[in-house]
Amino acid sequence: MRRRGHATEHDGGSDGVLVVGQAARDLVLRTERFPERNDHASVTERMETLGGKGANQAVGLRQLGASVRLLAVLGRDAAGEEAARTAASDGIDVRWIVRRAETALLVDVVDGDADRALLEHVPDDSLLTEEDVRSAAESGAFDGCDTVVLQLQQPEATVLAAARLGRARGLRVVIDGAAEGRTRDELLGIVDVVRADATEARTLTGATLSSPAETRVAAESILATGASVVALTVEGQGDLVAWSGDSAFFAFGDAAVVDPTGAGDAFVAGLVTGLRRGLSPRDAGDLAHRSAAATVARLGGRPDLARLAPHR
Image 1 (cartoon, one colour):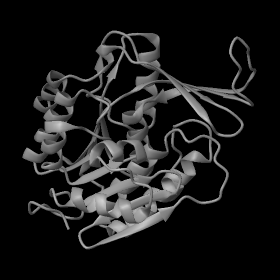
Image 2 (cartoon, one colour):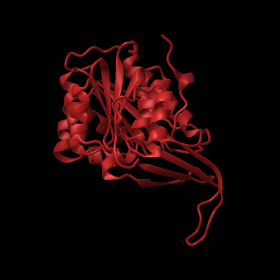
Image 3 (cartoon, one colour):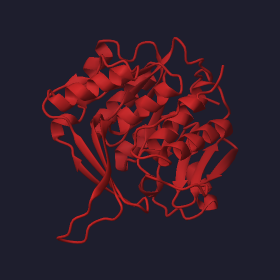
Image 4 (spheres, one colour):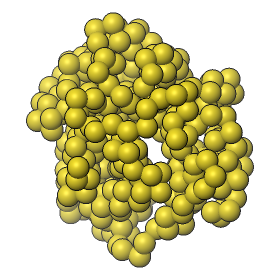
């Protein structure tokens, strides 16, 4: 299934996953209703923990059994210290976390109907640079890994540098998100797995994807660039996973959603885990779907996926 002659299966043991992306302090607030303008609302539940797309995906991958390294930025502040300790206690290799400046802060406010508002304080210094990626590579961050997972919320040059380094080393390269223009074209010529939510899928394909059939056509156009597996969200309906010659659609269920935060991160963790274990794209997509469903059933973006870990 893999292109460029790469191996298709890893046992998740000695080989590992490098996640390149965001780490942050995550503050989650639950309220019964959002306040009106100039009004207030009471918070009924509060959580503070390690967050950010990179960290969430790293945690999910670790819970699903992978050996995981995280390349991200945390501040030289108390929040950064606590986040780094949390990541280490989660079993994530934190040797390549860059420490500088101030830790990014994400505030997730969720109401009783599972609608949410996200406030972000992401200083420029909390984003990875090309130099961060190259320095990590020189010190062995990519060594012994079979997969690198990239979120496109990082600067384009940073993502491209990591993707190129992953490809040069023969790793499975996974991207989560969307890029445009020359960055998009180069990335799609490098990567093996593409995942995008509904908004990102529109950016990536230039099409409005309102049905599984339309989404399948869009996914085929991405597969034609060389990717092995493409996963796109059909807004409000479900996720479509496509590969050469076939696809599978996973409809959103009727179970109550507590907080949609982190669904995509858990989906990526499940999809990557399945592919690394040698599952078919259909079965890897099913694991991804179940991982996302488990995450939206609880408050906050931090996953809790250990019970879904595939057995050898």
